[in-house]
Image (tube, rainbow, N blue to C red; front, side):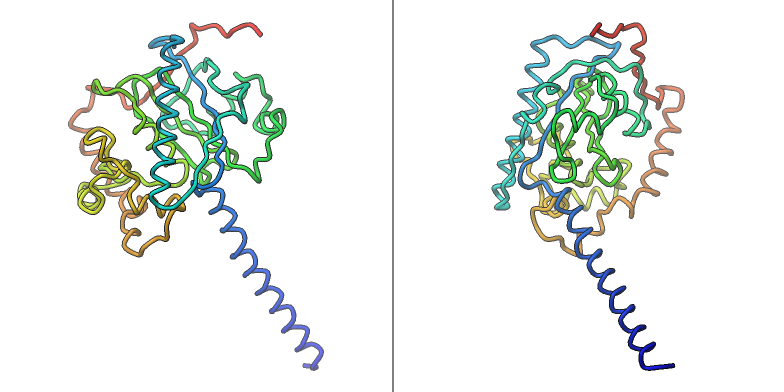
Amino acid sequence: MSIKKVLFGLLVTALMTLSHQSYAQTKPSKIKEYLSLTGTVNMVCLFVETDEGDWEEEEIEAYYKEYLRAQDWIVNQGEDYAQEVDFNNEAFYIDNKKLIYIDAIRLGDRPKTTLAKVFEELNYANFEDFTASNNFDFEEEKLKIVLMVKQNARSHAWNYWSVEEVDLAIVYCKSTYGMRTDQYVMAHEILHQFGAWDLYKGESQTSESAAKAAEAFPHSVMASTFSNKHLLVVDELTASRIGWKETEASYAYYNPKNHREQARKDQLELMKKYKGKESTEIKFNLGKKKKKEN
């Protein structure tokens, strides 16, 4: 083999290595920067009616104030980690706090399916039309959508890893077991939008891992939002997930991927005990409602 060919081969290898390193160094950091709960975060809060009840104007105002309290609580928690957070609720002022109807949402629906219905109700063709109409640069700015749903169910959220276009949180605003949906529940779901893990027993944690989380992070808002509310904090594990501090090797134990299979088996066993007592499907059937005329 000639020296020229050898040199050419080394050059190609070097370029490929450089290219790989460049991707590894810039692409993940861009995603991490987008996911981190730092800087300015643009928020859109919409109110969804269901067949279980209509939103009253005073209710919307009350829940929206609670939602703003959740943001303030997160901002104050960030200060404990020397992090600055600014929630911008004005970027989408035309749509923010708008009341919409959706014909059906089911537990297990893809978030993109739900978002498509949301944009349709807001009279946008799609996500691109939504951002363009608001002169919003999604690639450079953070955007979160929160749906306040007049329904009694378990609130949940997705983040950038599962929704490529936008992060979505669904907050149910009828109390579960008599407990009001408050700022801590809302803060819990907003933190999910930045990658926070659930730390309570359920789909993400087993009895054992949840017990260890409770011992290690006794006042975590990701472990419980129902008791000792005045003591609730963004714990150190969650702070590492949302970009407020460096992670530690011990935190990997609580990754839901490590427990999900066993947690689901535990839940199936529990469901067998209550089989036939309640449905596992949640459906909003709003067919009887008529859309407002434009």
